[in-house]
Image 1 (spheres, rainbow, N blue to C red):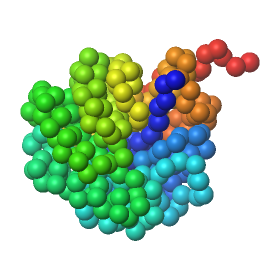
Image 2 (cartoon, rainbow, N blue to C red):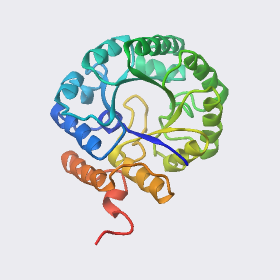
Image 3 (tube, rainbow, N blue to C red):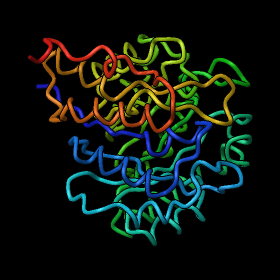
Image 4 (cartoon, rainbow, N blue to C red):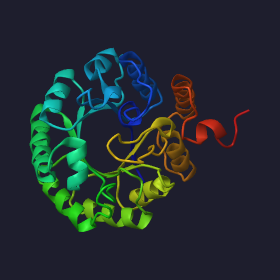
Length: 297
């Protein structure tokens, strides 16, 4: 039987590119709503410089405001060891360390060379294991770079091999600008899975291929998929990078295909409706507007 773990990244990746800045208490409520819907993993915050990403200011306040949520693994994004130190002090369950696989994107996103970020990923994964935290390493722009164009699969595999040596809990392939095709996703996912560590996929729906890519990853050995409630998302350092695949749309797709997720669809829809009102706009997701099928009486 196919098993998959979904991680909702809306409180971090979903909101980091939005024009409206939500207060820490509201972002904490979003985490609580996702937990109540049964999400097994939630990327709650990002420990980045608020001058660069003001939407992510007050990460510690968000974590402190989250009520009791014993079910999900709560994660935070760190882009360097300063971010990891901040995360460690909050008591979150998991660090997600992300870096770009191309020099131009990584310099613009993190101000570091790829080699420097690989070394940092290895150090942080080792530290996390010693500190009793889970660690996921995300390889951003793994299928295409907004500045350098096509990314060779062999290049990504070589980076993943070095990351795998320090035994992270998962390696996630991110299609940051939504250019991947299902065949490319399936091929690279299979090769990364052969390294012997759980593989995940993080897909943006910029060119309407995100859901097909998610299924391709799942069929090729991925056991973790990121998604964002309402289809929120985008990268402030990647031109034209639009939203992630929507959590509720992905859950509908998986459940209709016979893959149980254990997630409460009604609560997901309620959360998308709530976010739509907060942000005062229609979200990118489809299901919260179309409704489930068969429709409930």
